[in-house]
Figure 1 (tube, rainbow, N blue to C red):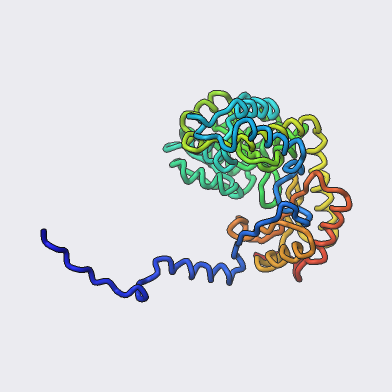
Figure 2: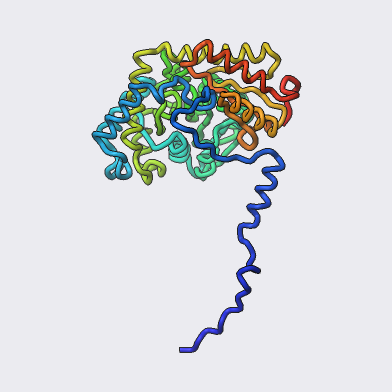
Length: 400
């Protein structure tokens, strides 16, 4: 057989770096103050936590931890497969029944994350020929669900039922509106009752991500849809996460039983993903029962949010009025927000820092979690720290 001619290979030192473009992007992020990095926390962190999504302080509650331990001891460390193969346990079905009953829906389906739940709901309920109307403030998981759905997506102005109505009226065929119930950046609530009326008039479905409403809004924390009187109505589907108010991990879709059956057969993030680990299921189930037995926890989270907002704005900071447990405080720039959060951390307070592209309006913020287990002294300490570390311009008109 003929021999191939030797390739003309340049010395390794002269070879081009196929990832050289990453260096350019890193430098651009550094100039814009948008570099993100991982910061592992110790198990016994001394920081006062206003950064996590542990709205009710249940992630370390003895009942929640015990639920995780007992589930792991009985079912093992993992679900062992997708839920359609070996990954469904009796515990998964028990959580689904109790979630559906607590939130007021006919049925529920548990997935490995809230992100996966949104992808499942949006993609399985749309597709080619469908119009998906999406609020401009929606979470990234909804945005990605729209992109993957192969549907026509129309992005409408924030919390604007009239814009939704006009968009739906211009479309013939299947349609759905998808929105957060409480938006994660500013903590404001969607006008769900008005949205539902618009959807009913247009014959469209309403899909609501209640990640930030469960455990905080509605009777005893049953969620924003329950508060709006929409839980269990035929044209409404809810998604939620188990990693916020329930202090665990995972997500779920709730709605009519036929919708849940449809997702079992068509939702790729359910069919092709390993089931949620038993420990997370057990923890979520224990937290859900704890919340049901102590419904005052939801009201307390809202009280803490109101207290933080009132005291910070009274001192001259600009913050969005919270509708649930998120308090958003505006910063003069992305770099100022980053420095502000770092100064808070050095002073013993952990706060969230939202910068572009996480903020759709380009305005950087500190994001505070109004945890329902915070004491009065801890609220005072948090406010004093935020005020003491506020950058120049924080009380002026905010910038990007």
